[in-house]
Length: 230
View 1 (cartoon, rainbow, N blue to C red):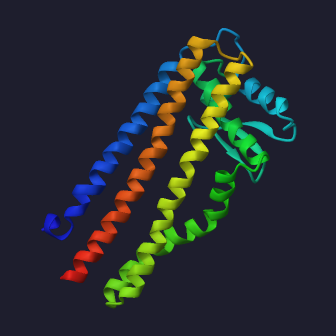
View 2: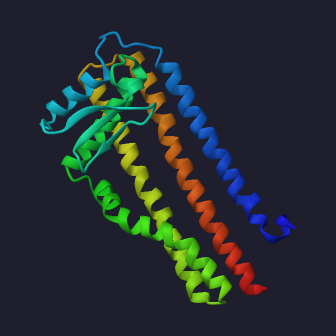
């Protein structure tokens, strides 16, 4: 019965979920692997972050420690690079790569990097769309109001747009990180390969998020189209 009602769940959502799980498993395993490989210079990830920020004139951006593992992020509202417990004091290749990546976001913010500016601008609309999409679709189906279903699907499509815009932001931050770590000698050639592996694995989680969002959108479109034909 469930297959008859919604075959697209198995055709689209389950494969997308598997891709997302594999991407998350890969980033965890890659980070764990290179978190045990320490840089020759012996400088901590927090020090690397502070140095790169200062080199780019971002003296007002703070580097703070945050609880958890792989909870690292840049907060543009507070102008703070937050590094997780597993990164902040570590001298590993993985930690240094992650720290440089988050600093890359701070540099993007300071230089008005267009994709980041666009992503920040659409966050409020995207959040609103994600909250309203499913209630609108359900209301449209309950009351046989086709325009409500269409508006709900359109609102959900904003999530796809957000994930799509996120890709260049994340890839650019990683590219900035690798270039800086190489140019400033924080990591040697062999160590850079490890940092690239960590950041490459992390980037795949954003690709997986886009695939999942697209799969969910296609499922809604196909279900709505099938219902119309029925």
